[in-house]
Image (cartoon, rainbow, N blue to C red; front, side, top):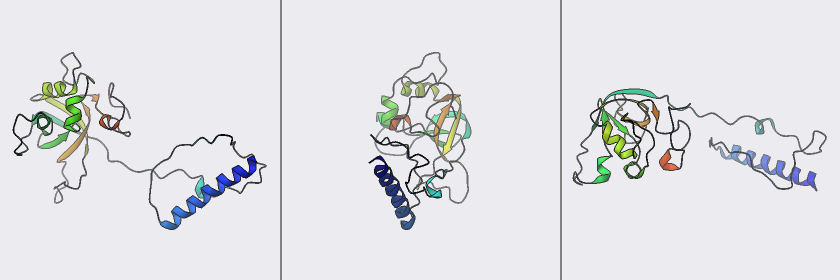
Length: 194
């Protein structure tokens, strides 16, 4: 019974891989191991079908752009919309450093985020919105990644004009590889790891 189950699992995996190859899928997501109750690895003396060489190769690695350093004075940027200056969400929507638009996350998250780290260096970790308020008008050093959004308008030149912030003054804001805190990722602690 165990051999039949092992054979069925191996055959299903090979058929799935063959179907993806035949369909031309370029899906590069990595999937972790899945536990199967009552199943054990096949022994070397098992009569199960041999695994195909392509089934044992490592998943393709997807390249990500390197972080870049942006230094200068953090300023609120007038976005030119008509929702008024008293809109709390708009207050945390548009920041710039040396004409580079920098994005700290969705304004709704910025407003609701708890104390993460002492980004403004005043000795107290406050809610993230208060930390940003303390940084406005101050010299900052940010580690950012170019935001390659479809609305990017710098086609003619390849300059950095819109960036997602990963680190503020040597302290992590979000993880380099995992989801951002507003998407369920871990809360940042200490310097950026990676």
